[in-house]
Length: 278
Picture (tube, helix red, strand yellow):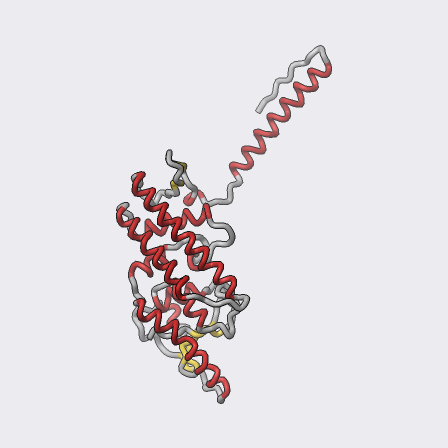
């Protein structure tokens, strides 16, 4: 920017005109810097608002969405966001001795199922609906992105969560049986700790639905299926790998509360029990 400052016979007036010109230049520089330094990935930036005030969070992966469908998607996205808040807050309290509620898990699952249904009516695939929700979370969720919504690189990517819920690889009955049975598993583990430990036995994967990369790391200890934590692991990763259902990370946490202080905190080298679905 080139500034042309005219001299004024009045010294005070000339000084004011010079200060005003410099102020405009500095403001323009700071504004340009602020726009260029946006930390939000461009692929997830909201592109605008519709007249009725609903946020349009569309990336290049999404087709145009009709206003009526957008209102429906936003409505159910808001419901899922509230359920997500409850889920995350409960996880945080669990680290301080709080309880994990199956009702909270089911409420979030139900909210995602309704959102998937709204996406289907808008002619969106499950993955596209997940992308829509991911963008909504990115621009509206305060705090770190929950691990169950993260991709392999830590970026927001809820597609695995949505696909697992849509596929229904873990039945509701199996989930409830596993949730109610984890206390029995812990009692059995305590009893086994009082006896002489057996030599760990590594087994080959036998379940075709288990991610082979994680299955190869399984070690059976005292009849329990276990896995040692490695860099980058999360309970959500384990739930997706072993059950095809990311939301079942809470079941894994419940079975390991004696060693885990928080569902989102794992120490490298920890041995985590991966319970079987009954």
